Amino acid sequence: MLNKYPLWKNILILVVLAIGFVYALPNVFPDDYAVQITGARSGTEISQQTVDRASEALEEAGIAIKGIDREERSALIRVTSSDDQLEARPIVQQALGEEFLVALNMAESTPEWLQAAGAGPMKLGLDLRGGVHFLLEVDMETAVEQRLEATSSQIKRELREERIRYLGGDLSDGNNIELSFRSEGDRSEAFDIIRDRYDEFLLDESTEGENYLLNLSLSEQEIQQIQDYAIEQNLTTIRNRVNELGVAEPLVQRQGADRIIVELPGVQDTAQAKRVLGATANLEFRLAARQDAPRASTESYPFRDEPERTARLEREVIVTGENVSNANQGFDENGMPQVNITMDGVGGDLMTRATRNAVGRGMAVLFIEFRTEMEQEVVDGQVITREERVEETSIISLATIQSTLGSSFRITGLDSIHEASELALLLRAGALAAPMYFVQERTIGPSLGQQNIDAGFMSVVVGFILVLVFMAVFYRAFGLVANVALTLNLMLLLACMSIISATLTLPGIAGIVLTVGMAVDANVLIFERIREELREGVSPQLAINAGYSRAFVSIVDANITTFLVAIILFAMGSGPVKGFAVTLSIGILTSLFTALVVSRAMVNAIYGGRKVESLSIGGKLANV
Image (cartoon, rainbow, N blue to C red):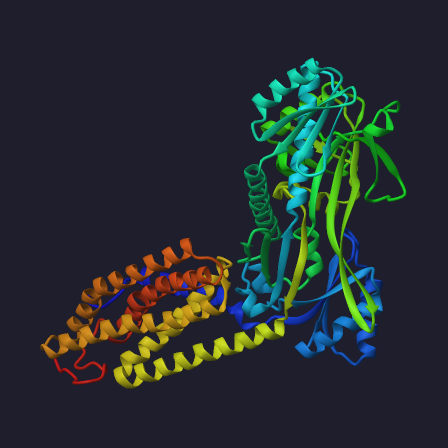
């Protein structure tokens, strides 16, 4: 029958709209302002007594508490306004002391029944929700030094395998390795091996007393390559760590020769971000020193969880975290947490060679952390801030080698599941090729983001209302149908963005406004086609059918072109550009559905299957 959808099609449309309503609904519930409490050290538990102390301090200050959410290692105290939130932070921090970190955050207020259905609000970008901005600087000198240390260890290992005796091999000032030999013959053999296998070095021979020296120096070109590799590897590692954190639409990009910008939307707890992202650390695997090992060939390190306890380790590094290809947290046969590690091909070979003759000895995992400390002092009445870069090396695991290790093994002796999970995250995300230091840290508060949200929301509302008025006045009943379809289009757009966890930014709001105009465009094409058919004397039923069927090709053609542009923007752009592209592409799809399918279903329900003498579509009315 003309202008009638079958029952199954109407039911399908209603089901799609119902699902859209459920998944768009969480966006109606705004996030609550909150202060978040976490431990200053990784693994610190948040007890009920800690929360009670913070609550009592807020009540004494006259700040109303809206609610409290406590988990094992964090707690959220909800307050009623951004002003209360800003006031509450220093109060809670003073009440709890330096053992805990207090940060601004936002807490979801989505009802539990919606959460049970998997529905949640859209994620908001840095410009809307607030978040943290970091500027990190890569230590290029240490990058070169670390490469030289690793290469020096490898060269000495190969010389031992070739049975070439050397007296010592250390890093000298500058970008050099200096090897010492007893005889000129040993030096000559070493010269030939190093020249053939390590073409990145410039070799120079000299003598010092009875010792024959071989100096290996890096060329300027090789130093530049090492530094470029360091920052690119750090970029990759930081991106992996951000992905492990689950931050939506982060920005990680290089700035200049040695700096990296990181922006994390929605993250107000800078301490938590720094512990994982900002843990500018590396990992090294070393054998425990033998009892009779000379002191010069060993180093003593404290344990991370027991600083008063130490162990002596060999100076030579077996492998670093750079050789780890995968790591997962698990449990041993006694139910204790462990980390299962898989090395890459090179790392597996090095581990096998190092542990083949070391069964029964201990192997340690060293955690080397670099951080920046700011010290302030008053000089001549002025506050002078000095930056001090501190390196802390500690043992996180020291286990006995039970058998020759290969590319897969496990780290045990960890204190908690949280520690095992965090170590697996760092290993899985990759090691930093060089230490990095925080040179700038900025928090964009939720209150500033709320101002952007309000401004963007107002622009959408004003544009939407103007379109609704225009369509109702100009196209009468059909205009009202278009207005309902337009409202449903916005609902479906919000639902789709919520379902795929897309991030809304200010450019994304611009994409929504553009989507509103494009959706109206499709309805205008259809309605004008119906008017044209009516002017030519076609009956109302045939005019409706012709209007939708003949305008279909033009509408799809125009939207496909725009959709392709959105895909290109998404592929080529980054940050806000991607946010705009995502919103635009989803808006195109929902606009096509509501303009061609939903509005047609409503028109069919009004006019289909019965005799119609005229259509309320504005302009000249056509009689049968």
